Image (cartoon, rainbow, N blue to C red; front, side, top):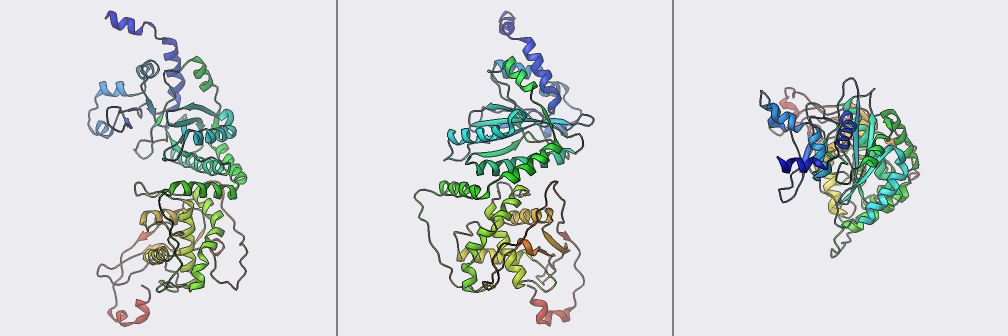
Length: 451
């Protein structure tokens, strides 16, 4: 007992108490996490996991030891334990903190890249962020008031802000990556864990600085996003992306040059195929816009880039202008898009350098639908288990967002009106029951032309 008293003798109880009370209103007290430093690759974990909530009655001792408490604060300040939080889903008082994480995850990224990104980020956010450095990068914590919005909408708007900030930083020459952490849990699921800034360097000066960070309303963040979009220099963004691409390529890898060969089974002539690189350049602004409002692929470890949207729009332009692989009622089967994608990848591996992925394609289609860039005829589809052609969804992208493969037509940019502000909820594919098939149709060549 003597050793225990001596251990706590030099602890500032007032600092622990004030720190606890300062963070208590801003986080989910039952969604805390710690770092499992005993494994080969340490990563944060939830103190109250799914197994705890599944077993009833709850273990009260474990519950009160795992929720946000003063003991955790004390250990973070004096023992250096890392403490993680998730966003707060309030009922009457809807406010939370969230983290913008600047990291150097890629092998070629250095501390200088993080420092450059940090400077641009803090110059823009200013007093609205509480900054603190980590071992690999830098964090900026924001205080959010989402009184007039749902938790899910708050997560979407903050993620949209982080994506737009990343484009803005790219336009200023920053090459580090940005992530949104400390999200709010919705639909019975935890939010993502983010590190609290409490560590051995914590003091009253840090606490006062955190308390003085102003609260920003979600409506103001939407205004910030619109302001950022106006300030982004997309030419500078393209230069930064090209520089990143050059770093991503292995040094010893020989860049293969491939001229387009035979265009068999592709509804384009040799001359039209050679137009693809130039047309992809013209689609970059639209691709960057889609990246800002993108839906994430559901498949794990599948990411989206602006080049994916360029390729997606090229494929959809081919489908729209040729009606090859679809009928005259604008059926747009995914397998048709896959066939065109893979054929272009064979002909020009430098431009179409990513293999086909269903989850990535669905995320891009949903993004386009959510931003009011499509014309929907019918979202219904059905199929027959014996391989007989079924019915695909009927939709196409609006003409102003596509490109033409006709050299005789004017190649100037079309007027494109992009939807701004809140995220829309667009259409999604809907599977319906297949009708009874008339066997006489199987002998009609027009029926099989739908494949």
